[in-house]
Amino acid sequence: MANGLLKQLCLTMFPQLSNNIRIIAPNSWRMNNVNIERSNAIEMEVLEKEHQVYASLFQALFRSEVSPRDCIADAVSASSTDRDPDESIVNTLSPWSRSQWGIASYWSSKGHSNPDVPETLTYRLKAGISIVTEIDIQPFEVYWERDRPICSAQSVRFRMGYARSQCLLLCKPDDNFVWTYTSPTFPMKQENRLQRFKLPKPVLCIGGYLQVELLGSVQRAEIDGLFYICICHVRVLGLPLEPAFNIQMFEPSGKFMLQYNPNSLHSTLEHSCNGENSYM
Image 1 (tube, rainbow, N blue to C red):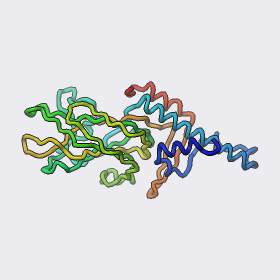
Image 2: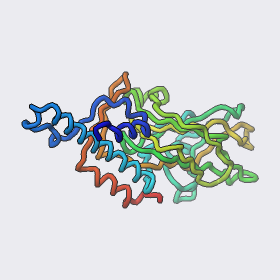
Image 3: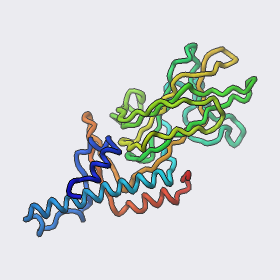
Image 4: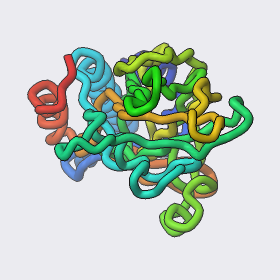
């Protein structure tokens, strides 16, 4: 504990923690009067409490892989939409390709003559700080067209980060994010199924936003000969860390303070294990 081994392991696993400028602990963790006069005792107590914080993060890491949950709270924006609201990004929150009334449910990009034009889908996660392990995407099968084409992307990539300003988020959502993590590129298959894209290692999403980059299209539409990407469902798996952990962001530096609530750790981990949205 004295050499901060667990802290270094956490920083190696989650490089985003390097921007943490302070850990805020509950009042019960404040130093008592006896130790204030003894610097070595104070230092040891600080190390013990810091060790507990990073040990709790490791517990959460284990839980996120053993019993992941869906982390998406809502849809923020799409880079383009062909027919809004019928083909809105909001439709990707539902796991069903048709609504209860039998109406097709999916997001569609605008049509492009160039198949290499990228598209993005941006989502807000359930917590300002989450561990993300996997993103799952299901392309949409256009069942009313001949040969039932599947409008998948050529490949996908994922970015995570935070919003600069809530005001800008409303008027210019695509320009309002700082991405602190970018995944490798994954090939997407032209198949009508939920395709799983497991990240090389779990990622600590600081700030609560995730963007799906859809890199190129593969399918032309019969009606106009343009290329479209259509997505039926997006799911982000991992573990929201609130209320055990919270963050306070500082702009424009990108630094943050990490708040730890030890009394909420058990409920955060157990909610993952027993929650209705567990996927293992």
